[in-house]
Length: 504
Ligand code: 5AD
Ligand code: SF4
Image 1 (tube, rainbow, N blue to C red):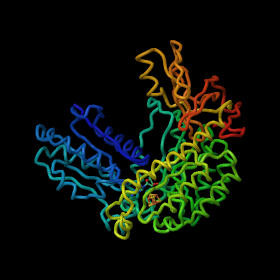
Image 2: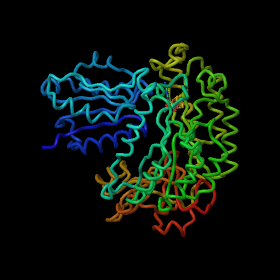
Image 3: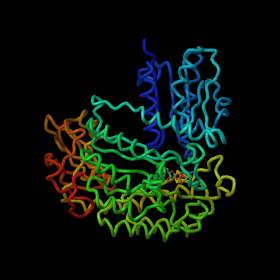
Image 4: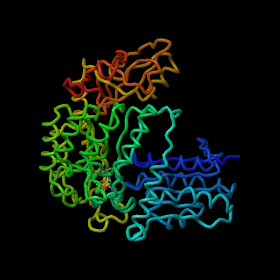
């Protein structure tokens, strides 16, 4: 009988992809996944350490599992991902009922660790695979990278999976060492995957019907691969190569971009390739030069503005999103005002806003006092959010009366619950109940610029690229009317304010 595996994922897209890969490997070794944690033989948490809040969620899950483990000592509990790497064996001291730890740079070993834990029964020795401070950073790095590359290459791609979107890693790790961030310590140094492996993977995904591939890297635009003969493939070249080699992929995107590394060549590739979405997630983090310096971001606010200007000069319709940290040590009201100004001037499509969270092991926690009170952090978070909401709503309102091409992700969750109860739905932007036709529901999808669109249509549209005419807008959502799908080649889609001959 197959053993049942429960895997819960926290954090970024990189973790989502890692979970998909390890799940594929474990399935191939006789495990089947279950949604029911209480009936699982193996419970794994793929964790995030970027803020304390993300770790607290996992601590509480692990706390809940104590009684279960007492009742069923043969149950295997594992922590994988960034928390495993950051906490290391200390985690066993706090949670002695955890059996297994595996860092994100060691996931190629996970199947073996799980197998060892399962076969050794309740007296099992603890299983760990952690990068630590010097093992995989030294002479063994090349061999380790080969194994991690094999994990990426092991991805099972099946036509029955029926998924419209997929992630493809292009770079592992990060070398930036922003002073507040744990990622360079948990995911290790930056390593770029061979371009042919990336192209082959994108092609295999498109062959089975995937409509949108998102290339992943912590600093995705920093991609550069040195071939044995000395040739280099840059990020711009990789974009051109994928676009040309996989003409049947309707949409290609990438996250997350590091603003300083954005070359004009990469922007030109976005401009020249119609199936690359004109969307950039390029976190600014702050608007004050003083704070950017203590964050070790390597650019000034002026340089960030120049980057945004350059991008908009080359593509007037580009949609740009950012991340910001409020309450970084030493941040004054004047510093914070510069962040507010940046959001107003750059007109971000949206911003992810975070309160500074001191992380053990980072430079910032050692060097700076966390001197902004939680009340100030909260107030700045709310004020910045309010400004961003105004900007987002004004960008979204410009879309009214335009027709956009939407990749349909599925049924809108909120609305489907309402409809189940009442048979009617209330459209959020005008609070008007709308009766749905028998074969219709509220569907949700995204534009090439990553704007969320809600519209009425049949469930069968899931995974399709369709045209929607926008007739309402809120800060987070566009509302519209389904126009029917046409061949992408014959349609000109409209993004963020101007008509372009796009097939995405
Ligand atoms: N505190 C708060 N936010 C952080 N981020 C990264 N580290 C921290 C931290 N210590 C945010 C950054 C990054 C996003 C993924 O998380 O804005 O872009
Ligand atoms: Fe963290 Fe900075 Fe690397 Fe992003 S670029 S993962 S914020 S160290």
